[in-house]
Image (cartoon, rainbow, N blue to C red; front, side, top):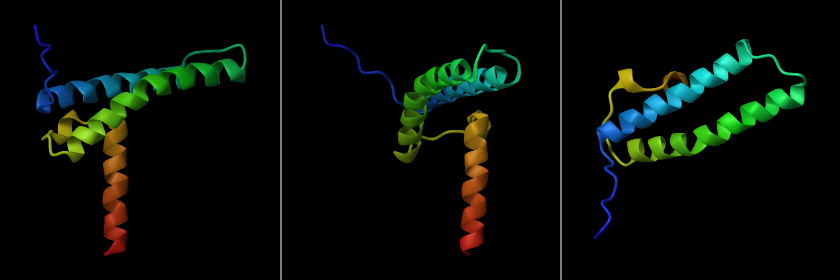
Length: 94
């Protein structure tokens, strides 16, 4: 029996955005509330979360670049700040 390829549509992208936002919230929680024995322990925990988030971010950006539609309201908070920075950079160029 043939494997069914995962869907790569706007709903898949929305789910990716939600998962990225979850990791953003985990990182924010880590910075504000979690206490570690040393700075190295904090950096290790942060590194682990960023390693899990990176492939999700890459996939989401690739899907958006390939033309998959998405709503601005579904973007993770970190992507919203990226959009604001890009838009202000474009305005500065003109």
